[in-house]
Length: 130
Image (tube, rainbow, N blue to C red; front, top):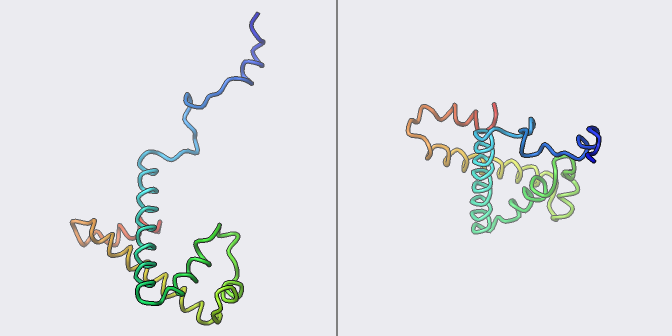
């Protein structure tokens, strides 16, 4: 005795048979992973440099504001400043400085991957999705 067709449909799994329409193409998945790897390496280089220079508090501010949780759960400037014992104005400057440092690291890494320097702007725009 076979189960009725609706029961079969309820128990059948299409995973592995039908591609997930929400899944990234292999090229898009590669690009996403490459961007994430490049970004993580840039952030790590900035962290190491700031720590070595005795400016680790700048990175701790950046980390507390940008790297600890989801964007929707991001703490306010005043909360981060209070937690880390810095003034809110200092915090804003630290965030600006570290963001620029990370962008510079990404810029340098992208430039190293290019054989034609004139391709830089296109790569930069592609990296940031602009």
